[in-house]
Image 1: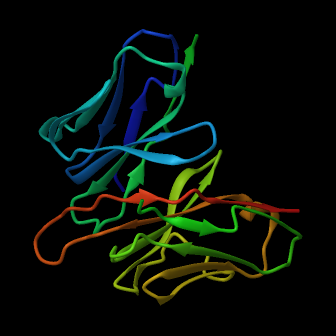
Image 2: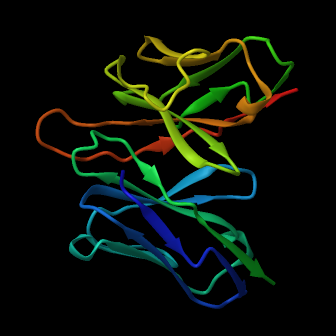
Amino acid sequence: GIQVEQSPPDLILQEGANSTLRCNFSDSVNNLQWFHQNPWGQLINLFYIPSGTKQNGRLSATTVATERYSLLYISSSQTTDSGVYFCAVERKGANSKLTFGKGITLSVRP
Amino acid sequence: DARVTQTPRHKVTEMGQEVTMRCQPILGHNTVFWYRQTMMQGLELLAYFRNRAPLDDSGMPKDRFSAEMPDATLATLKIQPSEPRDSAVYFCASGLVPDGRSSYNEQFFGPGTRLTVL
């Protein structure tokens, strides 16, 4: 199956700092999503981004499908950004099945 | 505010008991997924349905797990008999996958059912 690797595994930031989270995948994909799992366990959709760049407030994401990676940018981080960030991909031909990375645990300190 | 709902939110049961988890997908979505999250394995797909028909349940232990969609507004995941190793958070997700050649597949997750089997 497809491999999804996220880096770094853990990240500690001071409030106000910027960061870049990376997702590499081992095969061609139809779809890619970024999720934030908050401390209460809820999985929140951040971006649906099979290719290109999108921005939503302080967050933006870029997927370069031909080079098999995606980046999630967090600017001016806030304590509410803490949690685990997951990248999930649908391999071409996988018929909607998402494969998740192991996640990046982000802690933003006040 | 359209969202996926799941019941119960928490379940504690004893080994050998039957557990049923329920999911109401977002109205109009045609694809429903069941995932399990554990510390060791992360998020794994157990089974999914499109237009209420099962598409793939290869991620599910067949001897004790079963998944059904009695109607378009209800999906169920049943474990019988439950075992301690089934303790996990079970998520339901739904999406609208268009027919034809579109590959659009954005999935939206429910709040999960936290299952503890003693």
